[in-house]
Length: 67
Image: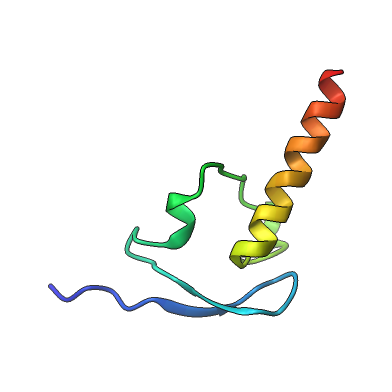
């Protein structure tokens, strides 16, 4: 079986092009955090920079709520 070729995507937030390794070998699998998928497919995948910004925003929100 041949390896799956990465999909070329455009970030839903900033428009930057990036590759997605659909066979489980995607760069996002190596990230130390996971974000829930947006409800109702409001956005598609995010580029590495936007995913990190989104994760930082979620963490800051949780930290602020914790006190």
